Image (cartoon, rainbow, N blue to C red):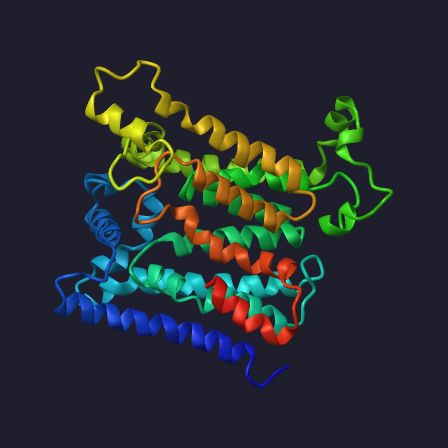
Length: 374
């Protein structure tokens, strides 16, 4: 291992980068009229304060998240002002844990089977990315979801299917969109050759292609222990969390956490392909067709990201499929604001698994490629 690339140096550098941004943010918030802290962080902390007082987090306007997030951030409501940054520290720590999991996946035999040094180089695309560090230390909660997504990928590649189901159910409860990864994982989990990576199966000339099987054969072989375990564990986790939150917060939980996103119309700073339609719908609601075409925006989005891409790619490369799904989901999302859509944050997270497939140059040029990608 190169003396300059060791786990201690990479992880300590990642932590130092986030601490630097965190302390810089405190200074900017204190002395600049333009605040470093993300406006959403104030929404989170206000909701956490309401929870600490025995009230509903949904009493805070624009809080559209699971109560779990407000529960996690209850320490931000404690009297000492230093606790206000607890959430930022939590999100930054999640970043580093996600980076550690990236290294574990790249090192595993079911992954790329890389050396520690090489895995650390690719993981640095995430760990040493200043954009990632900035987003988390400004108070975006996407770091928490990011660690759930990479933990889900790790659990699947290590064949810990029960744990993968729990993580998938938790992630979908936390934010709706990770459900698109479910079809990819189900298709990735072969009914046979359970211990063989998908890449090796796809290169096996004796392996049967689903295109040559009859529909009957596909239906008969599709259910297997791994797929059933994934479905049951994810559904049980998702249902349990939702029932618990509904029992505590009733209809406001469903309205603000899930239903709001189905009917949301946001034409401000929106770069979605549906921006003009949404603008007309909000400006002239009486003159726009009653068909509500903006409500149909989910059809092409989900058809591509949750059906077509998994069928075409999942058995070849699960991480690459998840990246393609994320890209398609963002591209066809009906709301894509200038602040960035949450899935955008995971491009850097999943890039660490994709870059090795495109690197066909000498090892000495790898740092240049990583810097260019960042």
